[in-house]
Amino acid sequence: MVLFLLRRTVALPIDEAWRRLTDWPRHGDAVPLTRVTATPAPPTRQGTVVVARSGLGPLGFDDRMDVTVWRPPADGGPGLCRLEKRGRVVRGWAEIEVLPEPDGRTGVLWREELGVRFLPGAVDPLLGATARATFGRAVDRLLGTA
Image 1: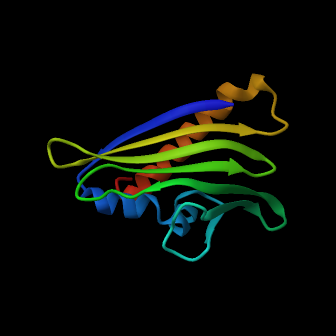
Image 2 (image 1 turned 30 degrees about the vertical axis):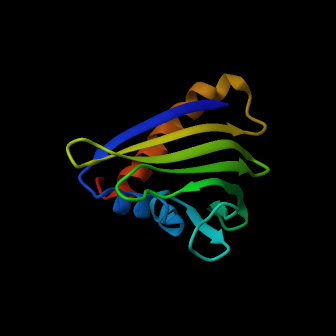
């Protein structure tokens, strides 16, 4: 398992940063060879299931995530979403947090613990570097800063 943290500060209202980061189908546009769906239909809430299907055709896998915390920002305050990864291949959790900054911008924290079944621990440094780069680009695209 690898643990990583991404930090961004953006010139977006906190509600807009939240909307962009939790628009699940847009995640598929931000990550190559991935399609993302969520059930039930929006709005997202605790219990929503998000599935990221990665791969080409029949050669792929599902990254199933259950929304276990759903606290959208209210009245300019912070927001937090926690997803528990429960797929057969990908395990761990992810947290997306938006925070008001004193200068009127929005702080974004993306924390994730990621494990891939069948990969030995010796591969963790490569997995961590790849995950940070991939998710970093995805966050930048979702926020419109790429």
